[in-house]
Image (cartoon, rainbow, N blue to C red; front, side):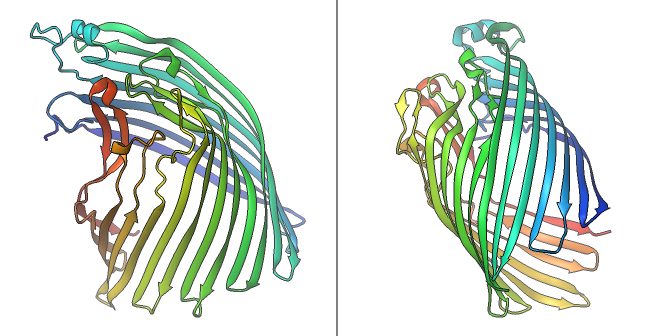
Length: 453
C-alpha cells in the first residue's frame, strides 16, 4: 500500500522551572519548586496508510500548565526525618480533533463528494470534528517521614490529602461534508464539571542486612482523579466523567550488590487491587468511545533486573517481568468481562544487552551496545477478541558509539529484523468493515551526532 500524503507534524514547547532552598536554621529548610510549561501541537495522521481516504485524523492542541511545590524538610541527622509539603497545579487545555472517515466516498454517485454524501452515509464521507476547553486544578497537602530504629530497620510512611476539580466547556462534535458544509451536530455544546477529595498514604519497612543488601515491604493506597472523555465524537453519551480510580498496592523485594559490587541484582514482587479502573470503551458498531470504569481488577507479578560489570571493557544487563492481570468484576457494553485479561498486559516480558568497549585511547572511545527484547502475547482491549490478539514477538537493535572529548557520534538501528507487530488494535468490523490498528515501527536506522558545550 502507499500513503496518500506525508503529513507534517509541528510541536512547540516552552518551559521554565526554578528550584530554591532556604535554610531557616534548626536543621530545617524550605524548598520551593516552581514550573511553567506551554505547548502547541498540530499534526495530521494518514491512519489508513493507503492512497484513499479511509481514515485520516488531524490533532490540534494548546496547553498551559503551572505548578508550585513548597515543602519544609528536616536534616536532623538523627533517626527521625520528615518532609511536610503543599502542592498546587493548574492545567488549561484546548483540544480539537478532525476524524475523517471515507472522505472520498461518492455515496450518491453524482461524481462529487459533498455534504449530501455525508448526510447519506454519516459518518462515512464526513469529517467528524470535536473541540473543547478544559481547566483542571489540583491542591494537595502531604507528608513523608522515616524513623531509623537501628539494627538495619527503618520505618517509612506518609499521607497525602488531595482536592481536584475540573471543568470541560464547550464540548461539541459536528459532522462536516467534504465541501465544508455542516451536516449534523452529533454532540451539542456540553459543559461538564467535577470535584473530589482523596486521602491516600503509604507505610513500609526496610531492613538493611549489610551495606550491599536491602530488603523492603510496603503498602500504599494510590489515587487517580476523575477524568473527562476527550474522545467524544459520535454520540452525546460519550460526553462523560469517569469516577476516581483507586489502587491498593502491596510490594516487596530486595536490592543487592554482589561480587565486590560488580553485580547489581534487584528483585520485586507486587499485588495490586484496582477499584473503578478507568478505560476507554469503543463500540465496534458505531466507533463511539465512552470513558467508563471497571468495578474491580487485580494484577500481580514480579520483576528482576540484573547488571553485571565483568571488567572495564565488558558489561551485561538483563530484565524479566512476569505479570498476571485480570478483571475481577465488570460489565462493558452489556458484556460481563469478569475473568478477562487486562489490555496491554503481556504475561512475560524480557530484555537484555551488552556494553562492550573495543577501543579507549587518546584517539577516542568506541563501544558496541547490542540489545534484544521479548514480549509475550497480549490483548489491546478487555473483550479479548481472539483475532485481535497480538502474538509474542522479539525485537533486535543496538548502537555503536564514538566519543572523543566533547564530540559524540552514534550509529543506531531498531527492529533490525523488520518484525511486523501491532501496538494497538480496535474492533470496528461490525460497523466499518475493518479493524483499526497501530503498527509498530519497522526497521529504523540512523546516525546521531552531538557536541557537549
